[in-house]
Amino acid sequence: MVKEYYERICAGDQLRQNLIALRDELKDEKNRREFSCLLGGDFTKLCELLKNEDPKIRKNTAAIMGKMESEDLLPILFDTYKNEKTLFVRADYLKAMSQMDYRPVLGALRERLSQLRQMETLPEERKHTQEETRILQELVMRYEKKEAHRFTGWHEPLEIVLVTNRCQREATARQISTGEITMLAGGLRIKGAQVAELCKLRTYREMLFPVKAGATGERMTPAQASGNISAQQAARIGAALAKPVLEFVRRLHQGDGAYSFRLELKSRTEPERRGVLLRRISDAVEQASGGALINSVSDYELEIRLIERRDGDFLPMLKLLRVPDTRFSYRRESIASSIAPVNAALVAELARPYLKEGAQVLDPFCGVGTMLIERDRAVKAGIMYGVDIFGEAIEKAKRNTERAGCSIYYINKDFFSFEHGYLFDEIITDLPQVTENHPLQEICGLYRDFFAVAGRYLRPEAVLVLYTTEPQLVKEALSGRREYKIIERHQINEKNGTEVLILSRNADA
Image (cartoon, rainbow, N blue to C red; front, side, top):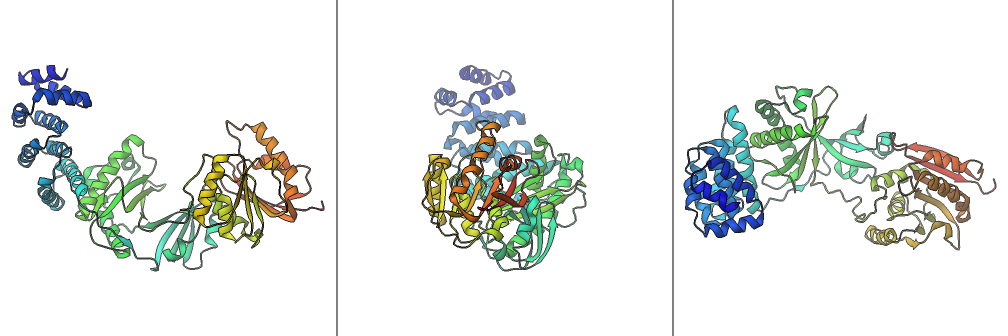
């Protein structure tokens, strides 16, 4: 159909419809090759159509020219772009040029981007100028080396929010020695905190920095949160965010140049409308910052997070990607059932009063070794053994452990046939859970067998630290077993019932 559509275009037959049809056909590489052979380097007709009085014809012609990926078309597209008066078409020339080597006009594109960032636009024009700005920015950044920024605010007293396990916020709070702590629904707010101290903690999920945004003149209502936000409202919100964000990151980083950011929305906004809100506010932040803050979908340095409150307003937070989080960098390999490192660290922290330095420790369902490594991080252990029936997990555990700098012996074997020459002071493990492949009846039997044989490996007065999604099954398996006593229970997840159970063993019972 490529030839037929082009012949109709050359004949002036229903130009707009046939251009759209040809543009769609050229999405296929085979059709692009066919069209290129058909033209034989003669772009006369396409160049003629760029002068058509119908802007949509110009728009679709530019899209087709971009598919040709011919540098011969670059000066033609660029000249047409410079002279184009219809705003909604301008971005299409840039999209077409993006598929070519446009470095000969890069300087002019950079200059145009600078102009747009300083330009005052009418509300009705803002949508199109912002799209042009966004594409120009992508084109310029593709060939520009991004300035590296380095975080330097390690010891500056700041207000910091740590996102933690909702049920066990106190486990993180008691590790903090400086600053004023306030409990939040999902974590802690610490005023006067130092990043250098907090980044050593292993029981928080994220470190965020509240932004003291200025007055927007607009309340972010639930209707606006659903994407029903005008360009003017977005501009005011963007202006309120840009200045405090920029001042904050410049104060805590070293290096010149623009900061790349990503905007994230934590709200009840419908997914199909969320993109509208994010795009408008991101564009407004860029505009208000004069290009000092640049929206980027990848390789960004800042995450500006808008968290919806119950009243429909938004609380802005920053996540700084230049603050390196290396706490769990050893855990490069995992399997589907692996415990999250931060949860393993939380287990070890909750069990800390019962952990002995230099203890001999066994994990009978060790997976990729995370629980043992975090146990050793909490209180230095002695000899540690990890047992697992899954050979791939054992191999991954060995590699993770080597990166962690720990000494752990791993054995690829079923725990129930495991043999060892001496007894252990502790068992710490993530107990298997009920899944489609491991139904309830199987896990019930496994738990009963576990407690039946665990005592063979434990010293008198040993401790068991068990992370489980099935605490009721643990209680049932312990029924009638006086040699074990639950001494502490800690809820980890209210929804799925996950708990940490700490048991003591009484060999005389």
